[in-house]
Length: 532
Image (tube, rainbow, N blue to C red; front, side, top):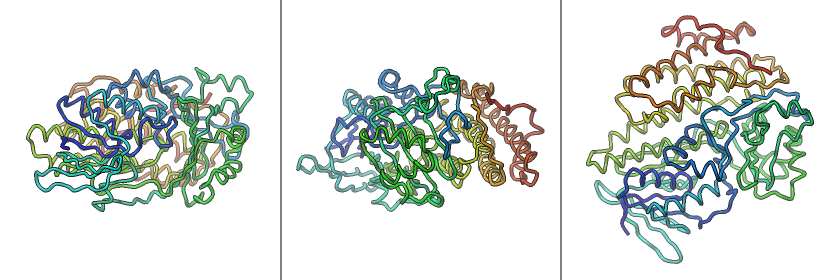
């Protein structure tokens, strides 16, 4: 067999790449090799059910899958955070989350339903999707020679020659293992998760009618709910199949994996730290569908894109942290770079230099996003600093990385070069702010007020979300990034002034030093408390 592109893995990363390539190149021959037989079960036991803005835009707009997402998946009611450690009065703790939907849609995705749909869609598009495959070996071509994949299916061994080879095999990491590309990072966090075959609705944890109806619609269950505490968070994600996904993610230095690495141990842990959830799950124990755990789940990769016409995407390459659900985002970004590399190769252009540049950009996004999570898990138990961190993190995400993706600028090298100072400055400021918030939290009084902190009531914050869907020409895009840079400077200055006023011993010199050369005093009132 011969093909233009062979994709190892027919999960989320591999199938979306196949559809993106088919959309761009109708005559391209594509083979996807998938280990599991299709259709896979609904509520498939995979991480990545909660999408955020980049992934949602990639799925519904770039790939044109909006009809499926609107009709077969759930529209997500944003993120929601409850400072509920050890509490049974959910209506008397701090809640961070919007009262109403923001403008740019995101989705809760049942991976089984979605990947079955993607497999059918790929076949309909002319992709050769072969399931039930065991990849036995890969030989990378030399110079301009083809790559060879040997796989087994139904007892037969097949050789497949491909000009391009893309590893989307998830944690199997076929190319990463073969080439010795595994790269550990210092984010030592573990996870355990399971599915329950019934809805888990936090609204049912309180009889307080006014609290229940504080949101419009009063459907908190549609959010990605985070139950947060010192060194950990627990996710609650609804699935369209009717199941609910529950996960515990914890810093191993504070909550060792041995405390959550079985369902019974996880339940014992929940009874101590999140008793309301433990009660709810106990009443549904007979509906338990599965359980798994991962030790030290976050990792990097030494190389992702090669001028020798191979690439790695999805969890086969890097995985960060699920707190803000960035997995789908980084699939969208890497698939976009891979598609552009294949386009340049088809146009007869050398790709080695572009592979290096795209990889540098990708890894800078990875490193900058990792700073949101690394050594930050203690902040999750701080009801005073966590709301500020969420606002900062989202302003940075919507204002920088989302702009590059939504406005199709990831591969616009002249534009990225012209905005280099702004982009590098924003990344440096984000790193300094993460350090500052960690120091601030160590001195915080951690007051847990019974309030809904609705970021949607911050007009500038809601507008930043709405503006993601604007269509910007070159001049408008440059202006948008420069405006975002100023906005981040102003927000950072106001945060450190507020924090230092309450904690006079805090050292904000690193943050203020970065913004001093670019901005004067921040306008007052940008960060307005929005408690109900």
